[in-house]
Image (cartoon, rainbow, N blue to C red; front, side, top):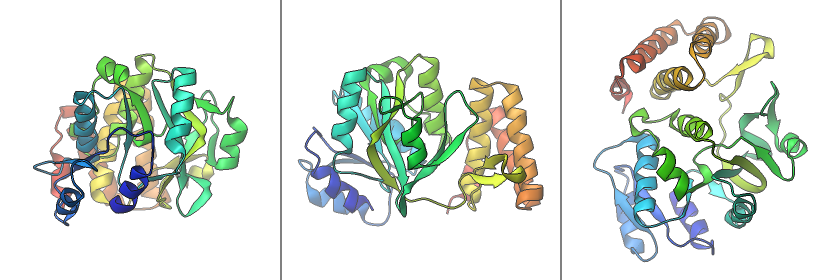
Length: 288
């Protein structure tokens, strides 16, 4: 996937540099990147696997050190449309956006969002691109962005709020960064005309309680542990204990009634307790 992404980025005229953070891969990625030459793609190999959170932490810091005024962030499994950056840049400059991103579509079905969006100020959760286009105002969904999937971040915002929390490892570092930007008064929006493809999974946004709400289930114990830990911390810091309790109740309900897996309830409790203690090491037992 990285190879196709790099090929697409090399065809993108508005990029000054392509920086790739190699998260201690062992599959030959570092050797392949080195073979391209630093004039094509600059890469930095981390000494250990720090997860997506660590990768974005180091990558954003690196870009700022290099003097970037705007940084375009993405994982290696996404793919921007050829005009994605041009569309984002035009709206970022026109509307003075601090943190903006494209519509993130399911690679398998571009009419569907990869990640459902809750429209701001409502209880509506939209799943289709047509719904997003109807909800947009002047081509934007204000106060909504899917972080780290083709998003533009200004240097000024990074200097104001800092870097993503690398200790989160995966799942929740993106939401925490978004909520931190919101708290700082950043101008945030999804630019509907900009498109970014990402592989979708059927488990994200799994309906529960008769379809009244959804739950981000994953079959991976590693991902679930990080999600339960990091979401507990994010909700406590930015939304309050009421939201934390609601999340815990949803978790218990989901794994007792929607998809019965009582072991997951215990795993969730351990993860949440670790986060509240400030322990960010527990996920390591699930690394393979």
